[in-house]
Picture 1 (cartoon, rainbow, N blue to C red):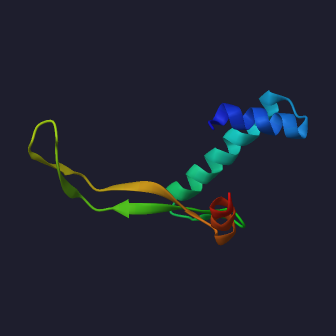
Picture 2: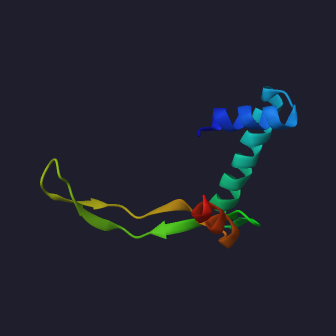
Picture 3: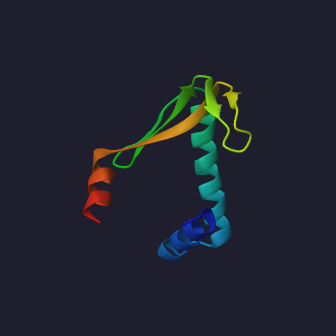
Length: 92
């Protein structure tokens, strides 16, 4: 499922216009991104937590070039599902 499909489903379930739902979804995602960029965790109880994860630089072997290259250190966003979400997915 992609963002367009989410917007469509929420629009159908709420009766709100797609444009309004799209604005809400975009603001929701922007807020999560901004908070994680600032080093804050975003916890949605009963769903999970978004957080920033620092990944150290590392060496990987390029299968194309056949030589080792260095991947620089970076921050990335990560997600940990809540126990409730994990149970629901396992039960599906």
